[in-house]
Image (cartoon, one colour):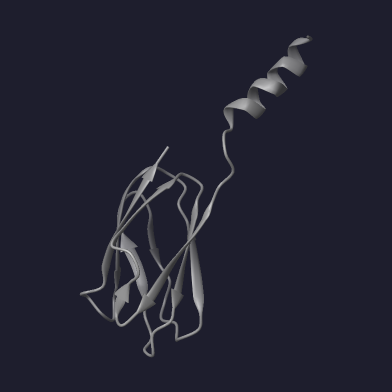
Length: 104
């Protein structure tokens, strides 16, 4: 096998599984899960099924974001691009907290 073809095959093998999508619902002023383990490149969709607005955010070094306030029926997505521990809250309802562990 020629070197470029071999390199191409090795790259295909080493890339592993494709990124996955996860859904976290917000209902009764709670996240549907308290903790979630995902891989680098995975995306989490935060769906608001509550009757009140939520503002999901994180100040964590591994992934900081602020999704802004959004009402019932809407969703917002976050892709996690590096490993680490991501603490997530709602700025409107401070008791809403969850943890996302992002692994390589």
